[in-house]
Length: 388
Ligand code: RM4
Ligand code: MN
Image (cartoon, rainbow, N blue to C red):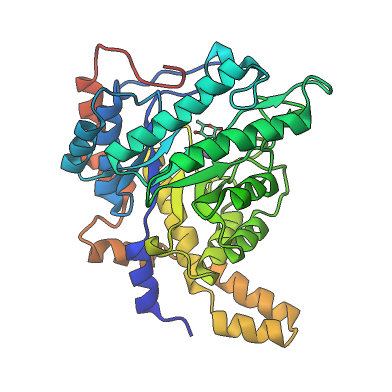
């Protein structure tokens, strides 16, 4: 039998990090639809993240993206975040937007460009020293478009060299979380295309390097929960970038395209007792809200993760293991599906009420007047956003 009090405690203790860029303007390569009230600077993004935390109670940190969130004084930015009620989380690097990076960043054939890219990674660790961040999140768009364009093997050597230099600069308590992505912007071969490549680099780097799974970065049909289970067993799962996708890297709200997949992923987390923040996995969102209002979309995303987690916690593991060990295929599947088919919204409403929160965070946000206020206040200046 599932211990409901323990489920509620686990849900109350859950932590989800939101991305600064999710609050800013974004779009597709066809069009960015600007929205009124969008943040004009890192402080306003942090204020929006703090608002999400105020209504959900489980999103107390915000990831930054450098240089999109570049400021002169990161200690002051940290202090501002704390005043708002949140902390600065992972620092994301950006080695994909300069003209110099046309042929790659750390795997570029030009040594000067590789140096510039690696220096940016080191600069991000300087920022982490000042913000107190634990995680350096690395994603490389590096790759090639045409067979023969560059040497696949040499590019791995260059990648390993840059990662080593970056790893060696990490301080105590700091980590690299290394993302992978199948394709885009490189279309023929990406230098870190899959979890196996990321895992292999992390293994040779050492214990402070772990894999970050972005749920949108796989081929259609990939069994992501298998990757989760494998990496957890190997002690090499460091972080998630949650979002959902119908086709490629759609960056839609997590749990919107495939809530069942999200449940299966969260079950592997629960199965490994890895939900507790002390275990060390960063559960982050990496999303873009191109056509919907951003703050309620992020609140909804946090709630979607909570719902999948609640269902995963409700799996009757004793009954499941018994059925599995007895080889009772249908019973094992039925136990699993029972949990998935439970309506956990009343349970989460109770968890929120116990924490002094409104049981319906999206409705509470809409009533709060925050949306009207940012639309009225944030006029003038340049809106922050993709490419800014
Ligand atoms: C990439 C990758 C990174 C994110 C950027 C904005 O596709 O997912 O995690 O920082 O997009
Ligand atoms: Mn990502």
